[in-house]
Image (cartoon, helix red, strand yellow):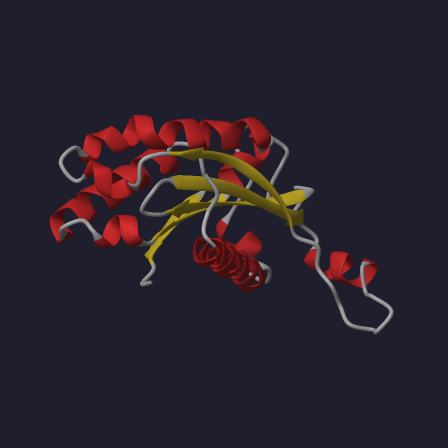
Length: 182
């Protein structure tokens, strides 16, 4: 059963907003990347040496949660100069990997917030399989919740948010969450 045209437009809009958010976040951290991330213990890799930067975006909607992994070359200034188009405008190539989708939506866990752990873990395990191990500590994860969270009571939202961070912080450098109106 296909999605209605309205649902397709909504999904496209949410995806564009998430993409915009990742790009803005990347641009805002370019200048300060080395100020807050040091070398990994026992590893020669640090953020400056990494070839790609990875961002995980979870679109947590009312019917399910889909995971996307966005990645781009880490050396922003050189990437822009290499990829300037004929118009003289700088360009940046952002690639993405579409991960799995899990159902039902987050609101289904109102009475069982601990159920979020087995619900979200397969998504993030899938991302870990895609992202190189030495890049995981530098990977940022974003949880963007829409109707699924609006349907929950405030206390359950706090519990769910804590569990989401607990699941993701075990593997990734930082996690940010936002609840979108809509």
